[in-house]
Image 1 (cartoon, rainbow, N blue to C red):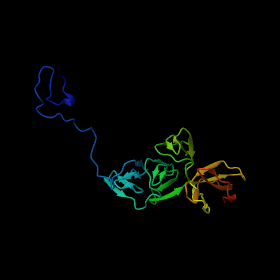
Image 2 (image 1 turned 60 degrees about the horizontal axis):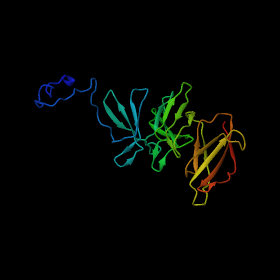
Image 3 (image 1 turned 90 degrees about the vertical axis):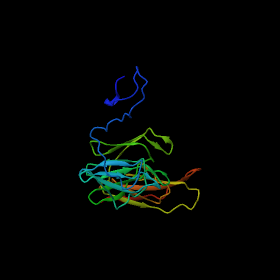
Image 4 (image 1 turned 60 degrees about the vertical axis):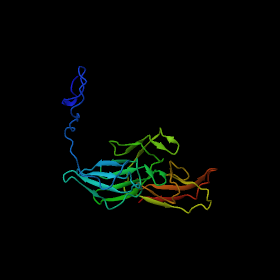
Length: 250
């Protein structure tokens, strides 16, 4: 019998002699130990940044979901916790390096279930900023940067189970509008939906925002007027739309 990994010892087809010593495979070529993360975590993301450091974000630790992030410096072989926390606890999300050097983190699993929200990490300031959301809550999906700068989001699991539909995300242009509404007094309300578009009473987009009573819109185009409306829904169905409001982006 040929020796595995070039080790001696072991049973042969001609002898029942027991092993004289254990056969230990050699270490993988080029594999070298590094220092530990600052926090135990799984279900996180790891993104190589333009300066050569690695951003590790979110995941779940020994006490539950994490909103923390840290940076690995391969030159110094050190991990450094980022002081600014993420805007949301999240795991099983995606992280996409954008052409401007920022990192788009979206979806995943939060403290109350699957998420549609997204946020941006800016390496220049080491800060996290909330940005526009996906059109559906998603976990375990893929996000791919396209040549035109948009991000293709595909598959995963959402509120109705496994997802087949895809969407493209336009990373924030820093032109934003914040929509705030009053809560519905009915305690049976489960979630709100926000509708918006570029013509009155004609909405091209709908976003499920959970029980939040505010939403920040990103990726708005200068010189365009946007129209917004909100509905609430429960097990019985969806309410009538709120009064429409509009905003023209300067």
